[in-house]
Length: 478
Image (tube, rainbow, N blue to C red; front, side, top):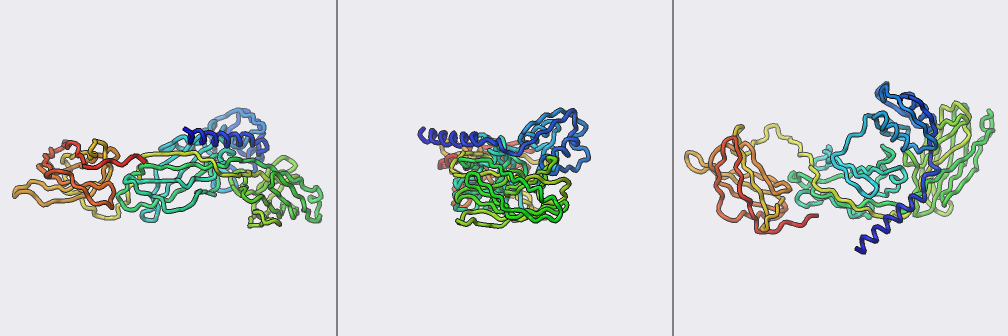
């Protein structure tokens, strides 16, 4: 109980810290719409956020009309309202904006991890033989909670149906992902899984911990732009500097030409602190606000490492804003300052099917004694106490024929989580069975005690063997 109390204390401290750092200064949307279609709202939303909203459908959301009244509403809430009203989703493929797409389909599995939802689909095949990719999508209640995710703990474990690890060795305390946000409240972590052979049929257990920063603080920096910049031939300005909670931004150079603004800036922050941008790009990039209240994001630019005078981490930026129709009045940075990735939320998921290995043979051999209208053989393997055994089963079959018993024909197969196995379309007749079992493919086989069993397979029906008890104990659940 002491460990549980300590975990609750740590989690409570983390969420309290996030609440105290509420996104009051975050980019917000103020917009009224009366009986508006989605196609009418999106251009107005684009002007207020600087994001493009694109759709392959000329009329996204259809003819549906709704009323909205947002006042200083976070963008995540606005997009959630639009998704619910117009039955659509907003997917970001790059930092410039969003595609309006059909609603996100329900995942195959979904589990709670504290205030987050872990959404899971089955792993996908990759072009590399024996390598799968599995995407873990953690959905947060808002973007601040989402950006509090530091990554997955070093205790991450993925086991196949034999209990073998499918994760390549990675002796790290934290597995992190710097992927852009495809959705503002989703953290994606892609795991490469290495299959040791073709016997793996499912993931027996995914176990690990979601690691959170103990403190996440939204920061907003506003730099007013000199009106003289709008005068033709004026000299570039610069030298503005602002600091919040140890995060320092300096504008070294700002120059304005017709419909174009150039910027050079430096950002630095204390060692041991992580600083990221807010929005679709996790890079700390600024945006412009013009005299009409319109937002413009940069068109061309880049960042490079740029340590401060005392050696603290940071970046140097050069960027250009184009297609300016009105005089820009301020430059805005919206950031998250994150520190102390020390809070762990444990999670576990069991029994996730793996995709079948692709069949590369043009004429794959049929199983022995196959017949299209034959019967079936069902069996279950248990330990000595009657608990199901999942593992590899070597099954030998010999069929009574006119001249006596045929030779032994062997096949390799895998029992399911309940220790079960079913062979379909066996030619009707009398058979002898030899069975050898392995908990692990690398272990020596263990023969089923007793003489070979004799069974009669009926045509078009099932024969079920009594449970086969092996002289061993089933391993404990992972």
